[in-house]
Length: 230
Length: 390
Image 1 (cartoon, one colour):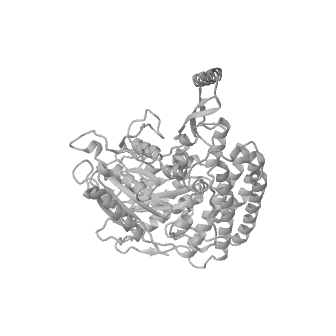
Image 2 (spheres, helix red, strand yellow; image 1 turned 90 degrees about the horizontal axis):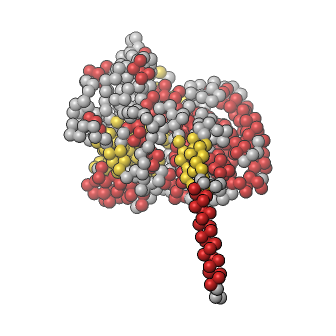
Image 3 (cartoon, chains in turn orange, cyan; image 1 turned 45 degrees about the horizontal axis):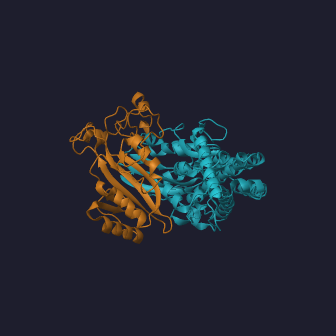
């Protein structure tokens, strides 16, 4: 288990070797890394994304492409009903854009959108999650409306084609050098990027989350006591 | 040996004639739309193929007809509710979908289920694999014009589904796995019933071996057809039996440290060097046999004890990220769960499904094959539509 906390467990020997070799090849492009008991994360600079994939595939033996996907770190975009039941978030983070309006995950992050991918070595049975900051998208004050973008991995992994098409249609992340960013799941005329946090989920707009009753405090339930049941 | 001028002229004329024919055939080429609803497409997968005579020039699969947006829906549900959704990803082996997600939540919470729960999870996991892959073993025959195997498959799968139903209450969607353990213990007498059903499944495997694997027509239609080389399989992220049929000796049940009980059983991982449709069928056939052996051994060694760990009454998953993947019936299935520590559900849940990657190879694999082989190759890759589209 890794929480985003300062002390991290020591890496497994294989993960330690991999991260060290990747750091040697990438230099300053390897921004940060983190370990858990079974997993390792590496965050690379956007300029080093393609090179990171190439080094991992050709020199470190991580030749199996597990997936490529995106994540939107925008917190509590103030959608009606959606997560509005969480009192902590509502009090501390007013909805809307502003500095510090998104969190970061394991291995950190500096932008709203991140792309993360997992590669594995099927012979030595070791895998690695790579992350890259790809920009703030429409909330970027310097480039409003600019799409988050990063280099495509299609030249390295043929299978990146579909994964990047999915990340593009779900998050609007553009992959430079991709042979054709077409819709994969959604109809061609679909507008918007559904997995972005500020894309409203109509069902939750119309009717607030019915599971509210489960997270509301039970009568006589004290949070600090954290009572357990067998 | 000298070549006379007339021979040279004849050769050149022959080449030119061939080239003309090729141009004509290309001009006469046809774009064929397979699906989305077609008896040979296993659900609503649409494939656009450009044909040159009987040969495929290019193929472009169009998924999305079953896209249900599970990754978005996971973000607005809590952890207990998510299992209801993900049951419907690979609907033939539903229980196997629940396990990696629950393991990811347990990893984030720092909980481990007691040994008996892990054993029962693994038993149900393998039964889901048997129910799922049995259907493939029969269906592959249908794609080649042999109708009998699929009736046998439905007949014997029924016993396995009855077992799953009597243990969990759901034939297809058990929704049985819980954070910290499982919902209920196995019912009385279940283990004896299970042994009988496993015997039937092994009998079914023997029948398939006789009816299909040893059949000349089956071999001619599958051997050397749809060959996936090892490197290409890795680049596309092909996993599971499809990868093992390409000589990749990789099975997460064996190669991944996991709290589940596979490590307590003695079983083998089968690989095949050929990478063709026949190899994929053969590997899956062996895997069903091995699965019955795993279940039997786990039932023999089933430990006593509780089936659920101590879990807070209100589940609150601490902030963090976890990646848990297991060897599902169709291949490597994994959940990348990001929690922000709020009392609701996951902040982000990336679902890595095996069929998505296994089908993304289709544009590469179908190039140059003949139309009847398109159907057998698709059948041998064995995908579930819900597993591609999520």
